[in-house]
Length: 290
Image (tube, rainbow, N blue to C red; front, side, top):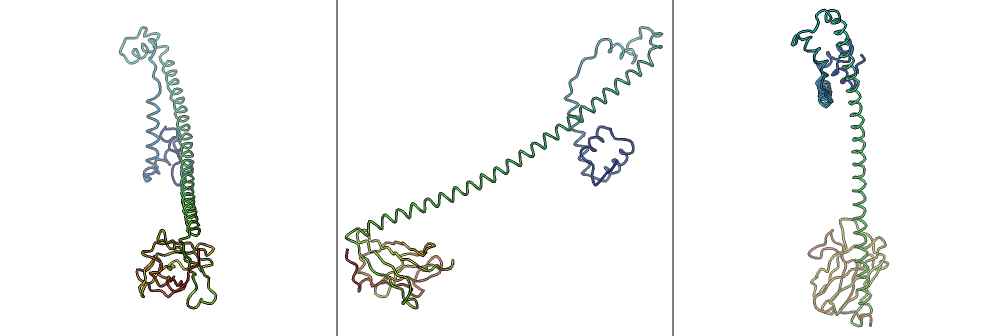
């Protein structure tokens, strides 16, 4: 018998059935004496054989066969010692032949059942693998649907803000102040507008071509009165540099001197720390007439 590293499932079945040759059985026995994994494999094969044997249907022996067994074992006296003496060796040989044939047929049947169980097990493994693949696909689709839902909600919110801003622009109570770049970018930087919605005490900031900032920085909008600054929140431009941002303001726009945009750390600062990059004069400027 060729033995690689461990007994194969077929070799374990043959060993459990006693179907190995004497030489192969000796090789397997020596290997099993030192290999726990193969002993477990042979034990599993023996358990399977026992279960299959217990499931085999049982038939009641015929009266004639029972009589023969009882006579041969001495439970009942022989009907004819002379006849029995003439036919006993042949009957014993024939009985041994039947037993051997039955045992061989049983071994073949058990081997077939074991092979069928293996095929069923292999099919189940394929089904489990397919199920896991489906689970991964479903998880990916669920994540994609969640992402698309978030994007739809974002677009709906942007559309709502567009409608609100359009209503403010058409209102006679709105005031518009220009936003100009400050500092080093004062000559060529982008501009924009601050729209004051007097009815709702809401400030809108609209700008285009705004520079992108690193992830650890953000733009922050402030209004000032008498040198004191109040934050109206932080914002970042979209991929095109466009900004539409709004915040609520206590009092009237004329109560404040100016509005400024600074660059602060990500998340915003509780007090103004960055230098102004954009500025809009409110009290001193004349708003665009409605």
